[in-house]
Length: 136
Image 1 (cartoon, one colour):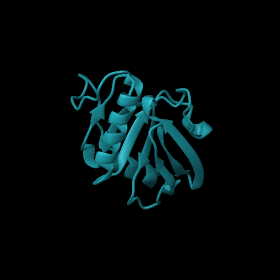
Image 2: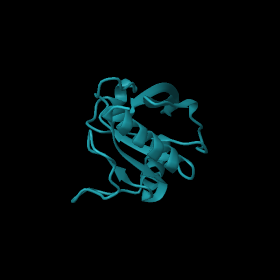
Image 3: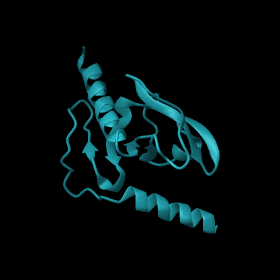
Image 4: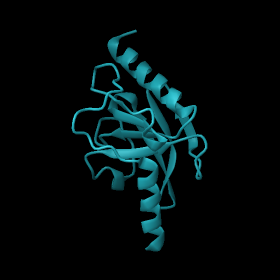
């Protein structure tokens, strides 16, 4: 197993570990080679996607492979296929800031948060965003 494969296997294992009890929030550069997300999500420097087995709107065609996490997610009610290679993912987080894991490209995962990083409660953020969308 080469270093890249080992690194990807560590990320996949961490994703599966979080997924057993939580939804998984992935943070990544949407312009990273091989990433497939809707054009609206490619505009920012960091894209955040939520994956889970017990989400209110389930992920369709959810696949975890040795290359990537993929599946159809909804964006403003429209189903879009997403494909995120493991090497593109910089951070994974479970609901309520649990299981927060940062990655440096080519290095093993670190559960220690970088100094000065902004921590947000993703579930509360998503709920607030949804409420703003529903209000128009």
